[in-house]
Image (cartoon, rainbow, N blue to C red; front, side, top):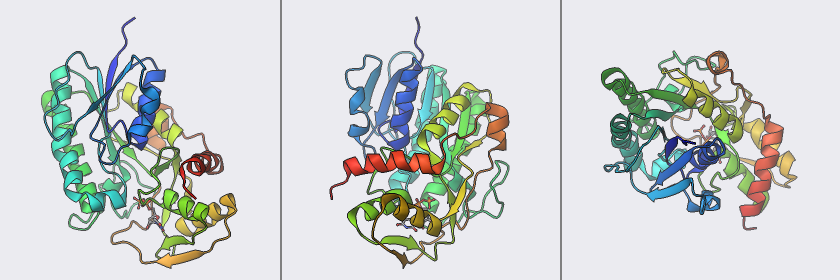
Length: 314
Ligand code: UDP
């Protein structure tokens, strides 16, 4: 039986590797493309020897040559944590712009459907709450987060241009904060930061006064939403995330309780342009995809904690 072929750029990253797993489980052939600057080969090492899986080490800002038929491209290559894109500002801008252009060129050539991983960062520090897909955002183009936010906004624009002008089949997911196994302990994101600190017996570093909010989605829910979007007919952006909103102060308290750490919370300076509030409105995903998150935070955090306990060096 014919197996559809999917390319996952950034396939050795946190989200990309979970997508590779899901696509293989659904009967796809998967080609993972990653330059491994923030991805990690360990995330896909369990797939070596799988005849339906292959790995190509490549920087997609350069021309992508892949022989044979390709049916789907899921474009997940990009540094994606604030620490990573502060360390890699030019690569972040290049992969969102030049990389997305190359991926769309490949999709056009192969007549493949391309799904772009976009982000809640396109909404910036939002003045509409919860964020709906028709909100255009409040982004500082020259701030430290601008390299990521503007790259993804450009990527959305480029994707829609290829869709409208070249008739390429495209999908755009706006991903909100997601957590789960295979997150990098050193990526600077709040969850690995807090869990790492708690497990090492260090104080938890809350930035600002901790009143800023985020809404955390477990990775299996996110992947499920993305898979449904890939197979849907929706060409405009769709938010995927878990609307359960929490302050960062409450989140730190939850992690201390969950880990049983004998540590306290200390306060550090709030990074520039750190969004004050963030919560997805997921009415569109519910209606169009019949999707909603199933894993609540207490369950998801338990699974994630078990993973971090295994990888952490005490
Ligand atoms: N944060 C924090 N302490 C940390 C790391 C992050 O208080 O050690 C805060 C950060 O300022 C932000 C929130 O946690 O308000 C989420 O940060 P993250 O880097 O995970 O992602 P963001 O949602 O900002 O892209």
